[in-house]
Image 1 (cartoon, one colour):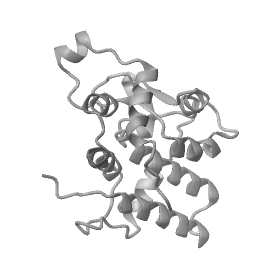
Image 2 (image 1 turned 90 degrees about the vertical axis):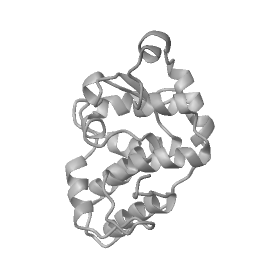
Image 3 (image 1 turned 180 degrees about the vertical axis):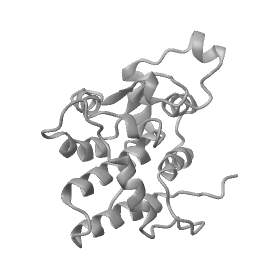
Length: 196
């Protein structure tokens, strides 16, 4: 069992801390919007911070939010195990991402991952259950752990997180269609709301 238990309240504490920093003038609007979108993206999608979140481009997000069923097509070089996969976007994530896309080039990196990582290092946002400082990887843990709370389908979860997907079953028999990945994901996550 992991000692790092990450709850909905923990993610909301990060969002509140980012919001307070902006209201106090410690964060400019651009960084506030970027950090907020990154927290929501990480918490709702469980993508790896360094391998995936840090490598996504504005063009990928722009393409995703324009879809009827918004999903990011994560490319092999953007995944730790080099597995191209669809990553569904919760409506709250779509709303947070839209302001990041204005007047930015498609090939620009979408998220200020290193800047946010530094911000977390110097701010006392702690996990409520274990009283340790929150790190970006805790957003992935939240999605995995909260997935148990909402009863998230194991196959859909494994595919989106690219966890345990290296067997014959996955390489030869399973194929995920965009609409199915999105629909199954939303069946479990649509009612989850994170507030700041």
